[in-house]
Length: 366
Image (tube, rainbow, N blue to C red; front, side, top):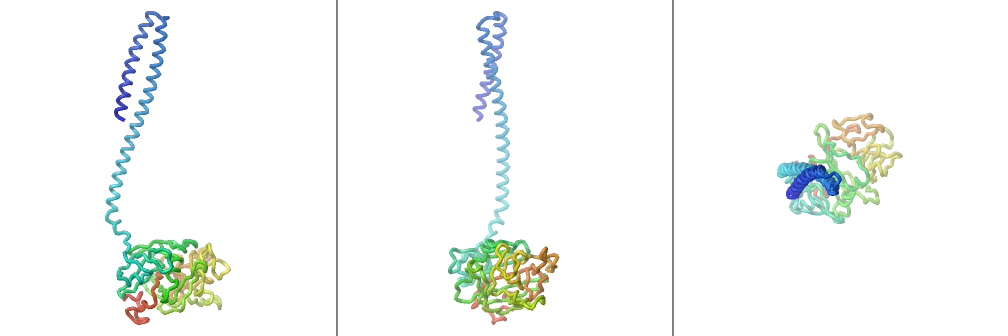
């Protein structure tokens, strides 16, 4: 580029010298013979040279503009390189350990624990009939029990008002430090409970806004296939100090309250796929996805209300109880702070203690 600019400058200088020479020659010719044919010829040549000079000046202007553009781009490239170095320096340490996936795999978190895993965190598992492995958060306690977590509510950071496909595939964020909210996905939950020879226990852990903790266990827990709208079934309520909200609750509104708020055998519903027993759409009114009856006594995917207590006015235009509810502990106008739903084989639930004494404290870890 610099060599070309130097050549153009030399040509320009030569053209200018030629113009001066021809101007002088023309003036001399005019004095000697105004009608001389050589004078007319030289005048034409002078016009050509002037046009050539104008073209060169235009090109010089373009070259000048291009030089400015090149300089500007070079400065921008230098700034971007510096920014890249700064980002690499900032990311180098914190990004190394931001997502740590444990190396052991299995059919579920209990299988992972059986193979020697002792650390809570993210693991890849592949249930017997799953087409491929998928990522889960495993809780592994001191007794070697491995819980596969399928739902987590922490702080309201994730909106649980999702459509059928999102509830099918799962949403939210899995983190190795267990600080995020998520729904694992109905299809994955179905695969985790499909064809198991040992009954699966669903453990539900709840925390209210005063820091109190309670739990409920349901054995022979299963979620059916999508063809059956991910139907929830379980054998019986195994125990726990949170009470049996899945069995329904008598709110005193109607004699059939308990029957129409039970959850065993219910299909999964979302706002865009209404499978409930209600004339309206429970999931749409409550802004969630859940195993709705008409509508619920337990509702762990409900709206997050900071502080817990809310009113019909807070619930919006429909005015229904749409919080995170477990009515056998707190009433329907109290939304819980934290919830966890997790699975474990029945044979491993009581490891380290008796049928209830081993699980009476939150998670049976202490």
